[in-house]
Amino acid sequence: MNTSTSSSASRALPRIAVLATGGTIAGAAPDATNTSGYQAGVVGVGQLLAAVPSLAGVANVQAEQVASVDSKDMALALWTTLAQRINTLLAADDVDGVVVTHGTDTLEETAYLLHLTVKSDKPVVLTAAMRPSSALSADGPLNLLNAVIVAGSANAKGQGVLVAFNNRIHSARDVVKTSTYAVDAFQSPEIGALGWVQDGRVELQRSGVRPHTAATPFSADAAWPVVEVVTSYAGVSRVAVDALVAAGVQGIVVAGTGNGSIHATVQAALAEAAAKGVAIVRSSRVGSGHVMRNGAAADDALGFVTAGALNPYKARVLLMLALAAGHTTPVALQQVFDTY
Ligand code: SIN
Image 1 (cartoon, rainbow, N blue to C red):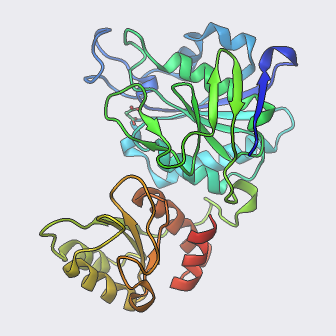
Image 2: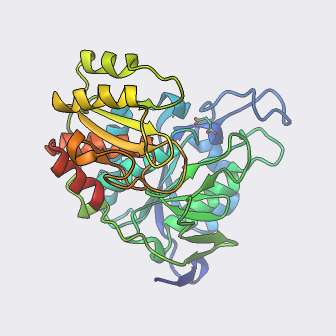
């Protein structure tokens, strides 16, 4: 367990690059009480920074507008651009850390992607907001300030990619969005946050144990394999699985019920797909817990891989990176899922 605390005021200001990608943090609505009918990603990074004058007291900030998207529209090509830009910035001696402003909707996927593909131990911190920048009590400015403080903290070095949101600091591997509207929208189910950031102070109570960043073989530079997600539920048919296999996907993640259990109809279709060489990863739609190998399905016999504690969308990220890195057999892929 690692417990550490620091104040940014007692040392030279860190040099932090803020990369903006859009999202509600950069959203604007026609009036200050509108927190649902707004347009995401329309406010530029200069305006976001100008709304937080106290940034000048905690870091020397340089800013870039990498994209201006609603993160529901996040594209694989933008992931590649973002990972490459972060790796370039962090390789420079004059950048101490990176903050990425992002939409909340796919933040957990981008964060885990960067956790596995950034090749530096310098801090990378994602943040976002649930209320647009125009809102009464917008949450973006304080989240941005806190993210910059975390990115400038020596304690955040070597922790992998972090998410600073509503005063908590989460590991990219663990964090998920758990509310459609609440300001406290991100949690790390089962495991909890790594720590807190409040009033300029960063406190980490623990570290993740799985390898990340430079300790992985993964890269966002290669062509992205086609991997899709299907769900198991009452009365589900095999139409989606059969269509994906016919379309030539390289992998399918199934969001199973409970401990990753799968409706017999879909399981039969997935077993046929696995026999044809499609990588099948069994995860759960439940939202917390983990999926045990050879528990709710005979993974060894069916040629399936289990996702452990990764939710279906993070399991898809890892499966794409693993396939791109040349891990294709169920045994090799299970090793990847058991490691990262
Ligand atoms: C988005 O994900 O870009 C829109 C929603 C949000 O940021 O809360």
